[in-house]
Length: 351
Image (cartoon, rainbow, N blue to C red; front, side, top):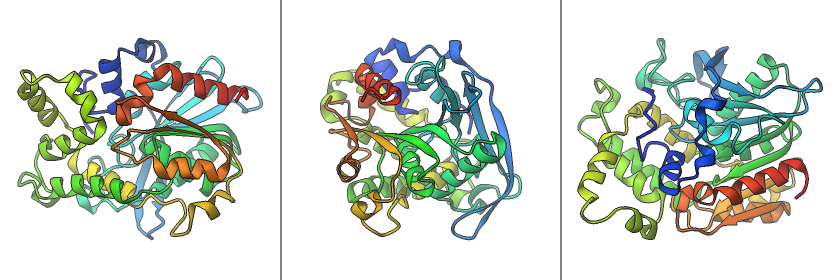
């Protein structure tokens, strides 16, 4: 992935909430900046039997690990996100890095960790299809083999990162004390699948895509427009974009999305397969969860339907925080103080 500038509105949804909602506390990136690092997983076997050759995983760390290694928090990236973008909203902001040792992880397919765009041996669509479970497995290897951790304090994530957090609770139920999925889902439903299939078809049917053999790094206008429509709500969009400014706004969102097309396809496929129950029921799966969980949803989320997460929280008797603004999927930013307070309280054991 060619990293976007921090002025790209639709690229990463938390950039939108910084710009739209002026949550200044989330924007102090430079203070907490940590250099990009990599762990090498050699040939990484996927659950479908395929292998990512010469697999690497990107990460950044913040704060200091205590002697007992009991203050570690793992936080993987969201859809199309990188740790470079994530650090501005999480490190020292959502997570107190004076107290916790934070590990931000670049999920597979984000253009930093192994992806169709950067693989020398498996470029483009020769790069194997991977799953949310595979993302979690690669992160587990990073934690246990690279950092020598047998247990962590918490695992959290936003959107696709929240999907990974849910999967962590099932794949490794005793690895973390606390799990915090934020606007994520344990299991996609029809509304989610309709959106993500629509984005994938918009890419594949674009004449510039050339069956994954496009040249350069062109924008993806149809998928970008679809994504932007689901990102927030009609009322929020109508408030933020006037009729007179619409044409210029549309050109900006449809012409500046430079996330690699094949990377996007592979991450879309991972999300479309997201189901922590493996075809079972959420109620039965809840019985397998050992970690305490804080589930944060947005009632007006048009991008990741909040119903499965809320239902799962009920089965777990877990803490559920429902955001109610018309910001939709980016509500955790528009209601930044509420989100931060809920996370801080849960981590400290006050809630």
